[in-house]
Amino acid sequence: MDLKCVIKCVVKKFLSKAQRAELLAELRLERYAKYSDRIKAILLLDDGECSLDIAKFLFLSEKTIRNYKKNYEEGGLEQLIMDDYNGKECSLTEVQIQDLVQHLSTTLYRTALEVKVYIWKTYKVDYSVGGLRHLLKRLGFVYKKPKAIPGKASREKQIAFIEILKKLKNSEDPLYFADGVHPQHNTFCEYGWILKGKDFELKTNTGRQRININGAINANDPKDVIIDETVSVNAQSTITLLKKIEAKNTEAKNIYVVVDNARYYNCSLVKEYLENSTIKLVFLPPYSPNLNLIERLWRVLNKHILYNQYYEKFSEFRKAVLGFFQNIKRYRQDIEKILAFNFHLVAA
Image 1 (spheres, rainbow, N blue to C red):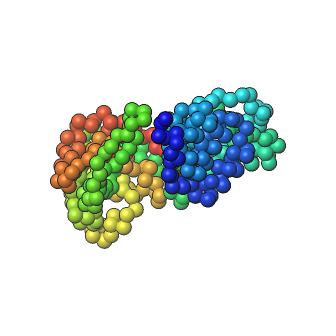
Image 2: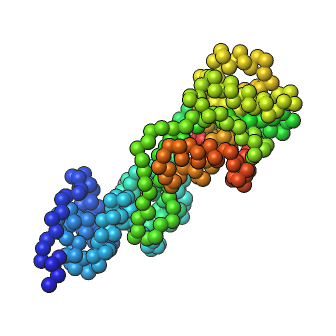
Image 3: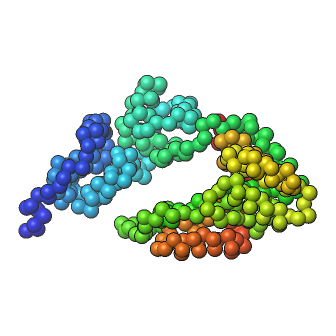
């Protein structure tokens, strides 16, 4: 006889009181047997029952029970129950469906249960939580984190600023976008294609060292990227960067450089330097990093150099980061795409 069949697993409880209460409440509401079985499996595992016994009672495989636990640990109740089930014809009318989609597009609910309550209060239509998840999926909704944006950004100011940028881009004067970046010596794990049921392990380190780079990119030339590696991004390093930009554009009457509202761009030292310079600083509207093209360049740097890469020594890390800028022509195709003036407005 299999030893697993006669010896009960000694498993430490892994559910909090709140998690267990949530699962029990869901179990009482759930009308679909296969989803209630998933909830039962998690509750029984928390009770100390072994996966082999639970599999026998529910007429499932032991692997399936382990997958249920993995799904719950990774995404909670939502991921435990959600699957590719197509569902039956919904109970809401077409008009109600359109109204619901519009409401959910502007109001964020944390769980399907909250949406269920809203539908009952508004339309007097009662869904099971499992059935509602299928409805939401059919309507094109997915369960993911919201994207954080600056709360004080002005849509009107952004629109007006984009028009200014377009005029500058189409003029004969060089147009640069500048900002600092501070890559940290560590491993940045990102999504990638990994064999199902397997883990892809990346080494990490505890390095807190970072590289400080002040940089600028020409809005009309993907090869024209200017950087200054510095101890700190401040007024002095800003002046050094501005001098490098001037040195590349000695024939220009005016050089426009788009910057954010960092304090050092407005300090007396930089203002004094600009009095005898061909450079004119163009300040972004407050809370509008989305309008600074160089932010896109940093994403290209992350994509090719930082994401899913392990550098054992800081010297190797620094060499890779600086090598990106030294070999900038290699990434011309990606950089040409980011120079498109298709700005996304983050304000409502």
